[in-house]
Image 1: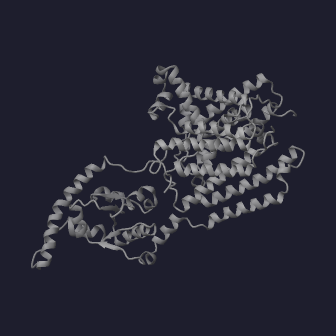
Image 2: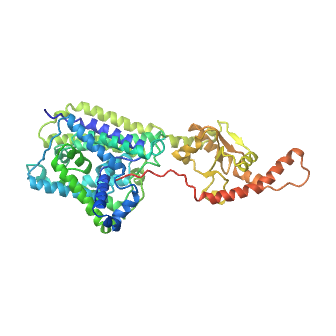
Image 3: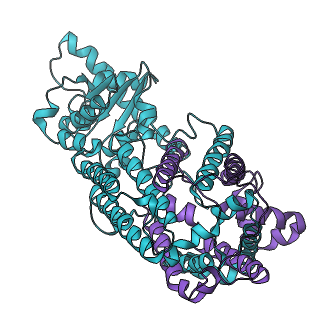
Amino acid sequence: MEEKKYMNPYLAGFLLGLLLLVTIFITGRGLGASGAVKSAVVEIANIISPSHVGSSKFYSEYMQEHQDGPLKNWLVFEVVGVIIGAFVSGLISNRLKLKFELRGQSTRGIRIFTALLGGALFGLGSQLGRGCTSGAALSGMAVLSTGGLITMAAIFGGAYAFAFFFRKLWITKG
Amino acid sequence: MAPLVPDLIGNELNFIVALLIGIGFGFILEQAGFSTSRKLVGLFYGYDFTVLRVFFTAGITAMFGVVLLGHFGLLDLNIIYINPTYLQSAIVGGLIMGLGFVIGGFCPGTGVCAAAIGKVDAMFFVLGSLLGVFAFAEFYPSFEGLYKAGFLGSPRIFESLNMSQSLFAFLLILIAVTAFIVVTKIESKVNGKPDPELQPEKKYLLIAGIVILIGLSAFLLPEKQSSVLNNAKDPAVVSKIDYKKMSPDELAYRLIDQNDNIVLFDLRSKENFKELALPQSDNVTYEFLFGKDAKKKLSLKSTQKIFIGDTEADEMKAAYIARVLGYQDISILKGGFGEFKSTILDFKMPSGEISRNDADTYKFREKASTVLPALIQSAKKQQGSETTKTKRVVGGC
């Protein structure tokens, strides 16, 4: 079956904005993603080496703030929802397929490396920036937080500034 | 008044809410096309600005809604999570994320989304993001200085820029609409063909016009809090309502009785309140009356809410605000705190002829002037342990 067309971007944005508004109205906080990654990392570290977690400042501070365990966290539940929601969306639009997407002049090996490296940079940066595109930039914009908007400007400004150097990863010409 | 957590929705139920919201979030991201790096990175090479359109529309929709709900006093903006501002780490962290974006082709939310529908490259991206957080955790001591530098509190952007919220909101909408138009032109240039999705342009100009109109209306909508506060400053407006006045004797009687059907709101300055405050009283500001904490106490049933101020005029101001906000059983203290202090607390039995009627009153006042200070003392001791203030929601990543 043919893949369905994507939703009109303005409509999608409007719905996403309403969802964010409802989130703030109900819970007093915005959406997020990287926070769940952090919870997962702390949980994994705690399983592999509890003694290390106890002695490390970062982990022990986190454990102290999350007495019920790192996974009992609002964002963890939210991201589990994201996985389900995206899966359902892919299912009804016929986009559910195991697929290795290659762009530009990348090879499979290069793409694995860039995905890992890009992910790692994003993960690291989201910790410094106290949130990623969802938690800091989008949710920060909704509540007009100065910090969130600075992070947003830095993410997109940075991406534009670096884009030229990595163009071969994404486009064939140039 | 929102937010509904934790009063109307418990913390456990909040996890279910999180799951449901997440499902909506993932569904919309995927439907918008955020599950492929082609669309995500297109923004940076000019061939596909879907991300900008979705992101900006979502941002201004939510922002506008937050401003609007705040305007009408439906959402307590003093409680919702405002991302804190740490200047250096916000910039450095953002730049690193930007670099990660053009190298990896996803961001964490969209990466999860793409992985969920089977994109293998996205799975590697998510794995990478785990490694990145792990690196931060392991080398946290080296990052800590940068992480905590330049803390400015949780300011909101219009405060930082020294402009009104509505003006900033309007400018942001204007910027967004301009961006939508500009990127459409860039897109068709880069792709070498007019994007069929964006023809005819008239339709989009119409949408843009509507959005600008809605934005403009933000100027015209009176903000509930500031308009009520403004009215409260006008004695002519305030005195239109009749306020129930409680005499110092009655208040003293009810305090001695330890009657729990009263709540006292003390409007005096913090210093005066610290020095001498009545039992069962809270030191509040006029602004406080609009918030969620005030609502809890002001909407108590069959309870007298009594405002105490330096003057009756101050008390009437607060009572006016409370009445406008729809609260019942509001009284003010006759003669203000000063009269209460002089007639009750500092009571001196007058010398000379005393009528029979006054004698009872004086007898009561004499008793009150010994009993009340003791109550005040014991209330003072308790106060340190008792804080009922609603905490700001903890959020963020």
